[in-house]
Length: 110
Image (cartoon, rainbow, N blue to C red; front, side, top):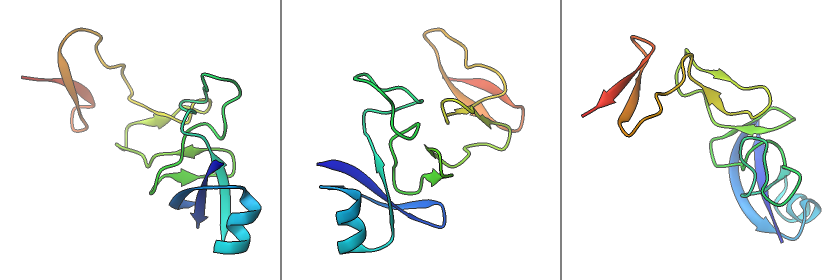
């Protein structure tokens, strides 16, 4: 059994476990694409990644891979990982940060 995502107009509307793509299309109709919950950022711990990222409801499909909607206008999608990246890296320390789109910077959360 594998995971399959139903795609309507480039948006994931459903994710199920089924015996195959053909079964999904025959019994449920529509367009279905296989996805793997082990795939993230175009990496898979046991082998070849499947469609860049695991599909979730509301995620987008461009014919190559799955990705989340853009979280902030200033962020860009990495062409390899299909993950969104801030224009500046998040600080690496023991503090918590949130993104502030108005200043396009990371702000420490107290």
